[in-house]
Length: 485
Image 1 (cartoon, rainbow, N blue to C red):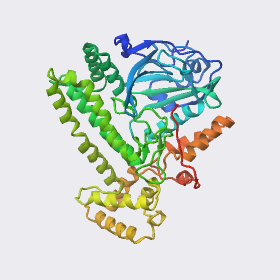
Image 2 (spheres, rainbow, N blue to C red):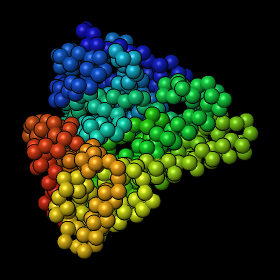
Image 3 (cartoon, helix red, strand yellow):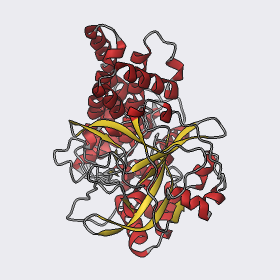
Image 4 (spheres, rainbow, N blue to C red):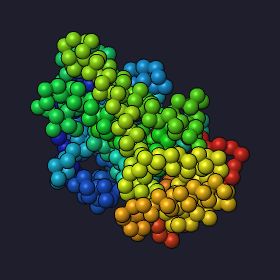
């Protein structure tokens, strides 16, 4: 078997076996590669030519194991819509940790690779559409400059999966800094073994925050670092109108990467209460709630670390609460800084937040498209906004221009700031569905390939992006997304 460039060091598999189960992917009938992320393969130190070979495809399908891998299914728990459940990788196998030529470590996971001890009633498989959807959205999020797990490849299996209908089966190769979740800490804490919890916390620190290993209270420091990462991550989601859709604690990573691309989507029309997930009937994970849910999830994380923060519980809780109390301000600082950049504001004035909030309120009232409003302002084409023609918008626009004039920086530098802060294109829901339909129903991957090419340069403002910035035709039916990726 060719090496393909694999260089595994499987540190997670050296943890106590209560954190995982050793299991191999379930072979599939006749795998075929449908897409390979060549730039990512190069970053990982892999040979993209070898990965496209027959042997390479067998590895990406789970039919053969790459040299040095130690496949496992990870155990974890999670608060799902506020209720705790013991969970685990029900249809994913972690092949191991690839160490690239730069010395960076990445989890390599096969998603849809068959049943595991955590599958419960599931078949452990995945349909082609959701796997391609995760590939598209995760790579778009990466191109937008937001931390995320990424997608290396998608293969079809030559087998069908049965959901509401018969669908083509598929396996996604997912790449992440790690799959350490808040839910993994919840799992460790619920088991009640303090030594294993401490061991796991030390592992997380060594893997993601080695700079805090020597601190007097490294577990409090770990909590503080994760707070910082999550506050910034969620603010960045808000800046581009991204709605995660299922912010359960098992979908929140310690590394601060976006993970789980099930019922996620990007807003078209701006409305804070926007929800896309078919199962989120109460709007728990609506756009306007994402920051607060982030804090709620971090509170659950704090509960797991309390026994490690101080030998006296009362003092440990006080330390955790003090750290968590800083989240709101951290998030707000990141959000405000990003929104200033979207309007080209390079210094700070007290009235900036009201200027931003007034614009958002007008966008809501006029049902303006979120991305295209900021795109039009960036291009100095206010007439292309949904608010154009209203006295309120004219007055706001004059105040904004006056605000820009009070900066020492040039108008050109403000324009450049806006261009790198406001994407010209996002993965529009109707464009994603168009690409998936062509791929799944017709076996035509060219629509997806063109979409991926455009999404790989979201801040380019080129002519070929024009049609991808257009809004969908109006529909009487709200767009819905579904769990199951």
